[in-house]
Length: 282
Image (tube, rainbow, N blue to C red; front, side):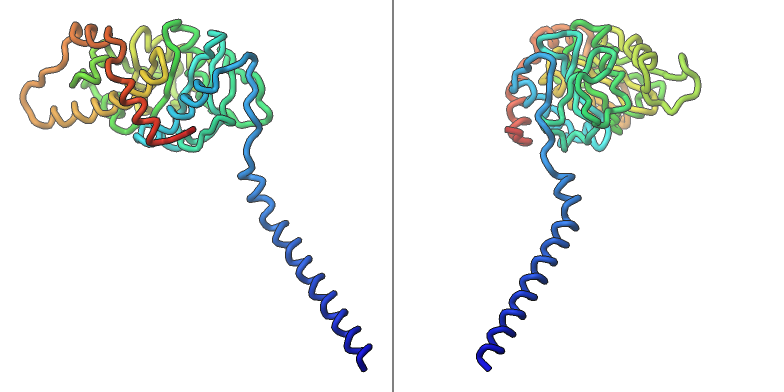
């Protein structure tokens, strides 16, 4: 009797262990895809070394512009390679608020990635390479679809500088019309010819609106770029508000803008550090 009971108990325990093992195997198989999707990406590979601080700042710029509503699921920001002016750094195809250091890729000015590794690329990356080719003074570029900018891209009302922080607007904000060179398109900058036309329309200005599409903004550094992006959108909102009041509006003068811009973004360091603290990427 005792032997039979012991044997029965062993059989029950053995079957229970098998059932538990089977269940764990099934659970692992079910959740494997999810774990695979969230696994950290491999470290970025660059042709020459890049200061991790610059990568951190580029990630911060993405996150700040997302937090400020300048970038959403679309749009992108880049920085020129500090050791090779013929290359630039830009994330793989990803929403700005999700960008991490591992997502940053290096491109040549023909917008070809140095090490693609099968990753998806932004369709409109041609904006960046063509502007870096045309503008030696530009070290950072952003493309945004911020809604407050759209009315000024489709109406006859030019964007004008409304306040001190947006003084750069007085330097001129042209409107790029893709139909002038390419007829009917889906309005995206899909190739080098489109990018070159946009860079030509931008000229030596700090930003260009893109009809019914958004804007491209440039600057000599990432902090200046983020500042210009934030204040360009705020300026658009303030100008619309001022125009609804009726009567004349007193805009900043071009000479005032020149004097303000000559101060190299006076006080921007304070805002930059505060913005970075909010999106803590360290």
